[in-house]
Image (cartoon, rainbow, N blue to C red; front, side, top):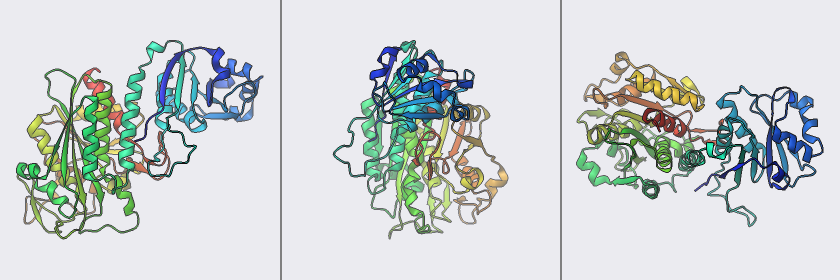
Length: 488
């Protein structure tokens, strides 16, 4: 398990900077203007910071960028970092300055934030970028066992919610670790075990095994895992931090590996399908964050855990399965399996919990990547208020999200000759027809959003707050959404 850096919030003490280890970071404004912390570091380094601030390189820096001065004379730190931040820069820029500081620095990091109002945002950016998935790399004897420390020097430490920042980082890192894990490690059983361990944070965790799922009538979900030796499961995580109000429900697709089943995927790139449980990973990370920060809200997270393999008992194209709702589904393509998993878990969530709103997340379609690339998740909704709350939170958290259409013409493409519905509607508007399939399993009167995260859950190159691989997209957005809807 990857642990975030330890965050320490301390009062301003410029006299200790000369003895700080690792990296020391200070800020420069427009025109090379130095803050109080930067001026102190400048004095310690015999004017090195001031000379840099007056240089052409500094004049070319954009807000949010950082540069390093290596092995500064007069200090024990290995590097001095200078970040460009202007007085009127927004939250996104402040967070990306923190990201830049984490990327440029080594070891422990001391951030001299003076009286900056955006100090917490800088710290969050720094925390989020200090991530590397090394669980399966051989460790050298010199490898550090303990995570680094990020020390934030501010005028009023009490004004910074360190526990809240760490809760977000813990949730994001948990999601990234789950999505990065290889499928021979993160089996459905191991996934469920890791979620059960979240009970130590106060979550109520329940695992529904295959016999219980069969009794509930989850034929759609069970059909996906028939070809695998790994048992299919549904895990329910409950956080009861509010009053008696109905919970907000989050449902995640947890296909721990997706071969495509009998509709086998091409070999090239199939290794990336370890991330097909990304929706379940986000729900898990969100629930961990909510529990760790003791959110005053009622939230339930449900994930359907399956593996899609082409075994002798695997579902065939042309088979008809029956969902928990009672609808029959003609399986045209066994590689469109995630919607079968979500259909049953969404229906179960509504039947059991009668939620105030329902949000599902899934790495559902390649079509959403064609439409939106790797910059935005696709959002589909039957409720403007819920959708607006989600999109507003995504904007505030600098996580790309874009609303996509729904409509009866798209749903018509899913009509089946022999069953109530088929699971694919052809190549045109593939992400939209997938959403329309899911909409069929949303009860009348239930506000609902479907988020297709296929393009943002894991990336080949660095994403704004993470190195290549799992991004943790969505934990921050959904945590903010819960906070804003509940008041905390």
